[in-house]
Image (cartoon, rainbow, N blue to C red; front, side):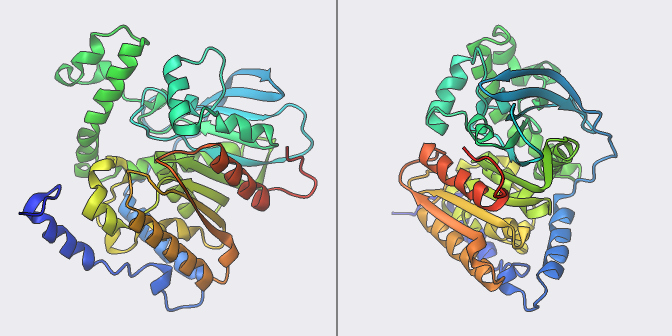
Length: 386
């Protein structure tokens, strides 16, 4: 009986190419002693492959709405991007605070749910039932950005390219692709579900358009997340030397590139998004979004290598043992690689990999472990941590 694969009898071709990827820019292959020199050279190569050089664009940020809820100041903010609508985000911090606080960029997931972005992580009044259901499945019902802010942090949750306020305007797309969306009542559950289906099916159109234009979806994503840090640094509540980031799934992918490329990130938690590329190519490529694909990056680095570009910053990776997005072999090999990298850097305690039973998720126990990691690396003795 013939072996089956997603690309049939040509899987051996892909695996042969994958086996030739020796990841020469991995710190495990680095023969020098200067970590910063390795980081500078390798980050430059990643930025070259991401191939997104944004036009200069002032933030022109504004606070569009502000209120106090359950001991937190909640600000709905927005700022400009070089193209498309303004990015909207939600900023949360304790209403009773003293001095500058540590900050975390909370990166929303992909979730096959592009109609909303930031709302998936924040506790809001009049929450749509479809978001409540999503939170229950992905986050054990928690609004984890709100929980973390109540612990004593400034937490910023921005929409990213193609989600929420930055989503593709269905009415601007050629009708043949969006008929189910246009026939539903805007804002209704039927509309949201139709939009999410359309936007998922349209990913290949986005990706191949950007590739042929000489850029990448990942490059745009990574730029917008670095811009979120730019915004945080304009805020008087934030201690700019104590900024972290984290997220589940697509938020984990965003964490990999934000932590790996931005020196301002001192601590990160990547949840449900880590594997060796070999295992993805062999067994799991069908599970993944186009937003993770950077042409030729595997010729230089494996997935764990990218987040290790944070250097001796603190990195936690949370793995779900029964996660259908990854093989357990790919997750375990990633964990071994990251341990090896940080031990070679002389910073073994700056990496922690944790494995949890169950499927793709960021449940309450995982959240508590992540929050304690942020506390360990971002909080001072005089911070109030609840």
